[in-house]
Image (cartoon, rainbow, N blue to C red):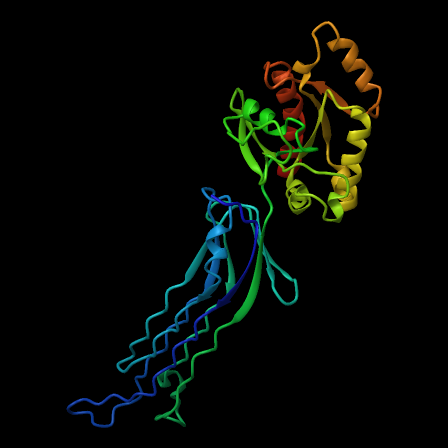
Amino acid sequence: MKFVDYVTVTVRSGRGGPGSAHFRREKFEPRGGPDGGDGGAGGSVALEGDDNLYTLLDLRYNRHHFAAAGEPGGGSGKSGKTADDIVLRVPLGTVARDGETGEALGEIVEDGQRIVLAQGGRGGLGNTHFKSATNQTPRYAQPGEAGEEREVTLELKLLADVGLVGFPNAGKSTLVSSLSAAKPKVADYPFTTLEPNLGMVYLGDWRSFVVADIPGLIEGASEGRGLGHQFLKHVERNAVLLFCVAADAEDPGARYATLLAELEAFSPDLVDKPRLVALTKMDLVGPDLADAWVEEARAGFPDDVEVLPVSAVAQRGLDRLKEALWVHVEAERDEAEG
């Protein structure tokens, strides 16, 4: 299924049904009083969170959503039928904005949560509501209220606890497949990841977190170069960032600094997130040289950054990495819960 994280849709709610200006006409009451019923409300258009979805693909090919109008009121105090709402199911992490003003309309973060994009018009009151001592035969009723129409932009920002950041071919996809049950595409050439992949990591004792493999960045990604720039927004939601730097890189510390600079250029808030470094592909380094190699690589990183050597292929260092990530994920959840 194609990953789509940005669409624009046009939504229109239904007009409310008009009230009825009806008078009671019965066999022995030829001049009965007003008994016009109210009109039904028009249908609304709303978003609803669905944790079984991960893309906005369905909405890309169905961009117009117009709800029906409410039915008019009738005699004998009968109210018109309220029109059905249109509910657009979207993945968790979807942000809705007014297409013209950019005003935030809301964000879907829970399964079943709803956000109304266009409220249906209220039905008009029937003439029975306007009867009074001085006006016992009102010959008018309210028309229904008009519905709303607007363009809405929907942007998906993945809700993952850990975001993997790295250059193409840094071993991110292989690492995700080893940490979780996710099966991203893995190959020995750059840009094998063309869309984010999510995986659930289990640590035992009922502990788990979600990890997201973001397509590889290149220098200048924040300015639109390469593939990864269009997915940088997804790391804004992560509790912790895991920088993946290949152990066989010429200067691992410099690569980390470049990645960090790209994130800061995209959003300065990203550098305030907790971050760790996974020194990937350690299986490419001979066992006799591994310790010295790691120490030399660590010297190129800031002292406050934890650098963990791992090999997804050889299944080395993964448990320690999971526990280190869990410390930050748990702290973020505790802070969110207050």
